[in-house]
Each structure stands twice: as C-alpha cells, then as structure tokens.
Length: 73
Image 1 (tube, rainbow, N blue to C red):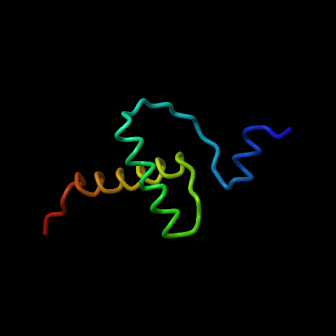
Image 2 (cartoon, rainbow, N blue to C red):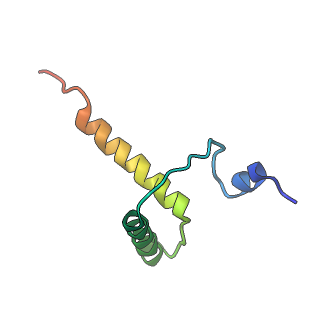
C-alpha cells in the first residue's frame, strides 16, 4: 500500500498543503468545461485539481503583473 506522499511523488506533484474550498455549481461546471477542453486539445486528461492549480497560478501571475508598481522613466 502506498502513502499519499508516494502517490504524489509518483504523479510528479510537489508535496504541499491541501486546501479545501467551497465553490458554486456554476464554477465547478466552468472548471469541468476547461478540463474537457484541455483534454481535447492535448490528449492528456488533467485532474480537476491540476486544472484548479493552473487557474490559480495563471490568475495570480496576471493579477501580480497588473498590480506591480510601474517603473518611472
């Protein structure tokens, strides 16, 4: 029997904290639609957690760049 850490390592995922969130049915449907679109485009079937992580990473990058102090010339 494998441990959760071994399964995460084998799946190529970094160890980290689990975060639980509540989301509306509409948001879950949007995430599932993106998950299915990524599967059709790439042939890879991403997990819902992988899609949520991708959305968080890209959303953070976008917001960080929008709110970064502008450089004065």
